[in-house]
Length: 140
Image 1 (cartoon, rainbow, N blue to C red):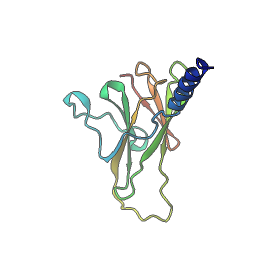
Image 2: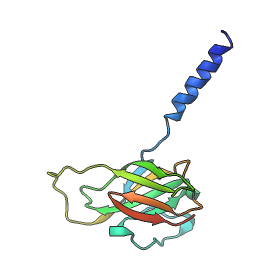
Image 3: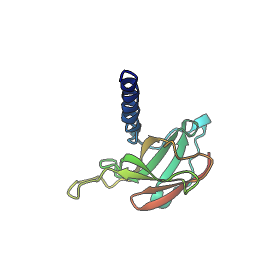
């Protein structure tokens, strides 16, 4: 019985940690991300101006979505749709903006940064689905 108790405790702890995968954004901010190695060039706008970037040597994915500065479109979650080798695709879930919200008529990018999921690779293009629109992030 004494040998079984430590094994049970370790198994329960490992199970609890498995549910602690961070899928929410590590940061959100207005504007585009500062690219690594001092580069100031950003890729061409994706679908409807949505852009994606590798950050921190591929350990993070940043998604910039244009919208009102008063009602920015904010990424709230990253979900793996297809793991590496099977499509390498994710979905960025966004925070809904209530229909009765009054927003400014300007158009500015808002960036949400997420940890790259463990079962997504930087050595294959990543397909990113945002609000029903798909963009592709090239290999790192």
